[in-house]
Length: 285
Ligand SMILES: C[S@@+](CC[C@H](N)C(=O)[O-])C[C@H]1O[C@@H](n2cnc3c(N)ncnc32)[C@H](O)[C@@H]1O
Image 1 (spheres, rainbow, N blue to C red):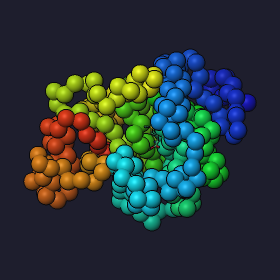
Image 2: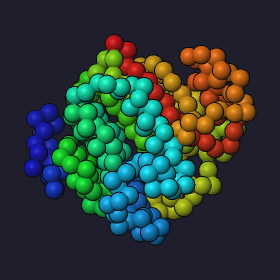
Image 3: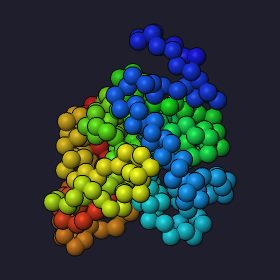
């Protein structure tokens, strides 16, 4: 058991993972329903059983195993941008991932001597935090990204991959990520789904997930930007998660150094139907 001296609640710890998604949290029922939905979906689609050869190279399965998977292409590209542009040679950072699932990113943080904490509502041993043991020894906590069980200003990097769009309350999740970030920290949402202006919030691609109880939403790029701004974060870079140029609509703008890529991406994502975005921001120092 893990006891909180603040709220005096006790949390069970299973296989080294404190279970801190408790039933009194707003939306807990929907979130637990989602965890069952992921297991149902993975079993139905044949990716429930872990494969060491695949998990060892996530997210770079296209590069290393010759796959042609657009989701992993986007996860891999946007995560590499996070490492290259915002981490670089830095070592020993305190890093929090929200919605980490298997926690495949652990090996990239551990090889940089970082103190990595992976959180998710999903603790399943094969597709959730339980599988994280495959990647080594690091912190794993079952936690709701909209109510993070960490003190203010605890982390140097706070990020998520394809998770913000599952939040029941998007501004709340971004605000929590900003709260636990220290001043000057990087806060990023990678590979999140967007819809163009005037497009339906009912994205047909999400229908299957919704049927099994997964909380799916699709926001405009402006809703993401507004959430980051309201959380007091300064967006430094906006780009397509797959790294493709924001053509045709933002191609010209993206040639303007520094701000061009971000403005071009915002224009592009406002005009297209459904697409992804990665948002890289900093908490002001
Ligand atoms: C599309 S999956 C991405 C998983 C992982 N980031 C990856 O790239 O492999 C979305 C993840 O968000 C998690 N999730 C959904 N709602 C959440 C919440 N409120 N707090 C934390 N994690 C959440 C889900 O359980 C799921 O593991």
